[in-house]
Amino acid sequence: MRYMMLIHHDEPALAAADQKQLWQDYAAFNEALNKATGASGGERLEPAASATTVRTTGEKTDVLDGPYADTKEQFAGYFFIDVPTLEEAVAWAKRCPSSRFGSIEIRPLHVPKGDWK
Amino acid sequence: VSSGEAVRTAERVARESYGRLVAFLAARTRDVAGAEDALSEAFAAALRMWPDDGVPDNPDAWLLTVARRRQTDALRRRQTRSAGEEHLQLMADEIEDAAESPAEIPDRRLALMFACAHPAIERGMRAPLILQTILGLTAIDIAAAFLIPPATMGQRLVRAKMRIRDAGIPFAVPEKEEMPERLEAVLDAIYAAYTKGWNEVGDAAPELAEEAIWLGRLLVSLMPGEPEAKGMLALMLYAEARRPARRDSAGAYVPLDRQDVALWDREQLGLAEQLLRAASSGGPSGRYQLEAAIQSAHTARRITGADTWPAILALYTHLEQLTHSPVVRLNRAVALAETDGAEAALALIDTLAPDRRMTEYQPYWAARGHLLARLGRKDGAYEALTMAIGLSTDNAVRHYLQEQVAKLPDG
Image (cartoon, rainbow over all chains, first blue to last red; front, top):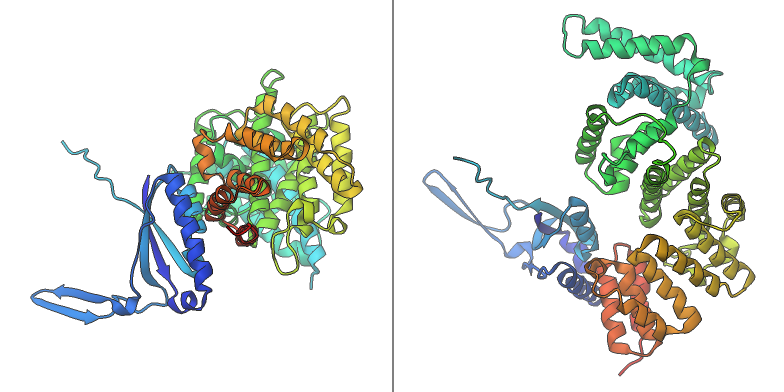
């Protein structure tokens, strides 16, 4: 099963962490992810303050500064994994250093059923 | 106000009684979920009331009386509906019969454990099923320990119970020729629950370890002639005895060789030794007895200072012939490092490298990294320890490995 792992950071908590340690942990995690599952390390996003949100309602389009929701934890990056079970996806989420500074949402990728005739 | 001790005693008695009654009803009706439903409110009431009011003289009779009242109410409420009524009536009749002579209710928990660990039940669900049916743990508690969302765990438990009912899984202790394999499945399920409680350091973990040990004791009492059951209980007790020494006061990971043996629980170690001796008077034979014997040798090594590495190596060699497990070979390599040196150990570990499962097995990379560091091969050690760090789920272990990396010589 392919999963997208959506990383949400508590940005102040992340900023307060020992950065050198954090990026060493991340390097080790990416290395393990790549060697063990063949997955690439995914992408990291700029902080939520850099976001622009577009919403079209009827004829009207709003373009706003900032993320779409003003929550404590903000979407910060993602990676993909392909593992047989949810349990293994949970194990990878737990290994990911970001899980200590927010949360990781595990979402199975949609597979078109293709069973129509 | 009830003390913690009173709460635990009451809870134990309630779980004993509950498990016995679920097993009895389920064995008669083949309906595990129905038996749990019929007893759930009575069990919840017992957990609530017994710690304060004291444990009743006949706990089974108490639970049956409350369950009987509940079933009568449920039947009355559903009088107009036909669906499910037959099933309710069946369960009500069974409870009625049992309540007539609660002293004569046979203990069918062993049969229930064999049903839960039947080959037709998905391997990963066997431990959760046993924890729920025999101990009355909730899906929420089990989910927390197994790191699965509660709703998912709930659905899987429901499906597994339907399978027991629909696939005609027998509620019986297997015949002699089937016994070794079937017993292994039961032991593996209980041990899996224990290792969950051992590896995870979270809040739910020590409790789960305690429940698994309790199941191990129950199994030994129900099968007193079975050496492997004793071997498994001994194995869990050896590990549990060392729990207080696994972390220092700052929460840092302490490897076995640096643990303060004064913190080990001597009572549990004594019990483990006794069980192991009783199990393997003619030398350990089964997988769990061998693993327990290895832990016994580690304990002796640390407490008396005797060099038991050759014995440990011999036991792992025997165990590998029995199981053909790559994990056992890895452990044999670690023992080999102590008897024949790191070079020989590394050569053995190299034979595991083509095994795909090893690439995400954290202990493989940790062992490899430590051996390479011992041999002064810095680059290889750095690479292997980095993998081990990346694969760690436990922060304390991660920090320990980072210290090992920092100790690698420069250049």
